[in-house]
Amino acid sequence: MTHQRLVLGIDVGTQGVRVVAASPTGSVAARAGKAFIDTETRPGPDGRFEQECGRWFEALTAALGDLWAQLSLQGLGPADVVALAADSTSGTIVPVDAAGRPLAPAIMYSDQRSRSEAELVNEIGADFCNRTGVRFGASYGLPKALWLAQHEPDVWERTAYVAHASDVIVAWLTGVAGTTDANNALKTGHDPATGAWPDFMAAMGIAPEKLPKVRHAGTPVGAVSADAAAATGLSVTTQVLLGTTDGCAEQFASGAATPGQWNSVLGSTLVLKGLSSDFVRDPDGVVYCHRHPDGLWMPGGAANTGCRALDAKFPGIDREAWNREALNRAPTQLSAYVLDPPGERFPFRAPDAVGFIDGVADDVRDMYSAGLTAIGFAERLALQRLCVLGCEPAQCVFTTGGGATSDEWAQIRADALGLPVLRAQSPGAAMGCAVLAAAHMLGVPVRDAARQMTVVDRVWQPRPEARAQFDAAYGQWLASLAGRGWITA
Image 1: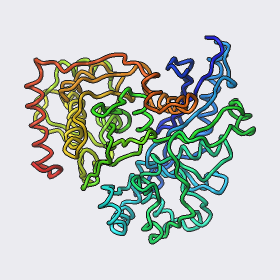
Image 2: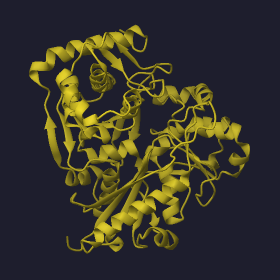
Image 3: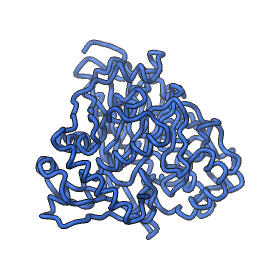
Image 4: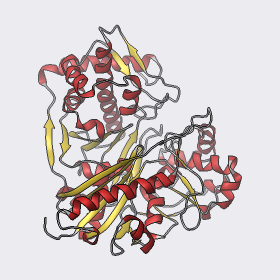
C-alpha cells in the first residue's frame, strides 16, 4: 500500500481496546487489540462493576504500538492518519477534573448500585420521561451520577464534569475536556429532542456546570497533543473527533443505512438499532432514540441477554463445535432465556427477570441450542415492538459483534427472525469510529461514508422448510414470557 490518507477508529470495550486504521474507501490497512487485565472489581454486595481508567490508556498505547508495526511494513505511519474517533460503552460514567483526568474508577454500564437512584430520577423527572419515552435504569449514566453525588461527596465536590469513557480518551489525547457527544449523553439525561440538559437535574443536586457541553458525534475537538503523541506514537497533525457509544458505532459500520435496515450487535449484550426519519417515543421507556449525526434518529435498545449470559450459562465449551450442532437441533422443544446478571430492559422491561429453560432437554446441547435460538427470538420481539411504535417494518438485519462471527448462529437467527441476516466484511465498533472519522475527512454525511466503507460479506436467508417450526417455537417462547408476567399476552 502506497502513502495515502488514513482514518483511525478506537473501541474502548468491556474487555479491552480495539483499533483499526482504514482508508476512506473501507480498505483496512491494519487492526490491533489489547485485552484488559483484572477488568472488574466488586468490593461490595451491591452489584458494582468498576474499571480503572488507567487500564484504558495502557491498552490503547499497547494496541497502537502493534498498529504502527503493521503499518510500517506497508510504508505507512502515524503521519498518514488524518483523523480519529473513539467509542465507549453506553451508560459508563467517570468523574473528572477540569483537565478531564479521572478522579475515581469508571462506574461501568452494568453497575447496579444505583437502582434506588434510578427510581428517584424517574419520579422527579416524570414529565421528561413521559415526553421522551426515556425510563432510567441502573445501567444509565444519570442515576450513577446521582449515586456519586449522594454517596461520594468528596469525589463529587472535586468533580468538574461527568464524563463518559470516550470523553476521557478524547481529553487524554487532546488536553481538551468538558465536551461530550449526543449519543453518550443520552443515558446521562440529555434531552435528544431539545438538545439540552433538562431542568429537573438541578433539582436533584446535579449542578448544570458539572455537565459537559453536548455536540454531534464526529465533531472535531482538536489535534493530538504533544504529550499524547509522545506516549502513543500518534502524530500531532491527527485531528481527534467526538466519538459515540459502542452500539451506535457498530451501527455506522454495519451496512444498515436506510430505514427498514437494522443492526443487531451480539456482544456482551444484545444491542439493536435502526434509522428513522421521526423521533420514536416508547411510553414504557424500553426503546430509546439516539440522534444520528446526519440528523436522523436511531431508535433501538440494549438488552442484558447476549454472549456474556451464554458464557455464564455454558462455560468452557467448544463454541464452534457446539454451534455447528446447534444448527442441526434448532428449534428444539425447549423455551429459554439467558440472563447474566438478572433483570431485562429490552425488548421488554422486567427488572427481576432471571434466566430459564422450560421443557425437558435431551442433553445440555439441546439447552445451548435453545439459548442461541432465544436470542434470535428476542431480536424478533424487539423488531415487532419497534414496528408497533411506528418504525419502518424490518427488511433485513445486519449482524455485528463477537457473536456475528458464527455462521451457524447467523443461520439460526435468520430462521428465528424470518428475515435475511447480513454481515459486513469489516464490522465492529472500531470500524464505525473510522467511518465517523472518514465522514469528517471527506466532508460527507456519515451514511455516505458508511456506504463507501462497508461491503456485505455474506447473507443468510431464512430456510423456507424451517419456517413453520420456528414460528411455532416462537409462539411457545412468547407464552413462556407471558406466563412469567414479562410481556402481555
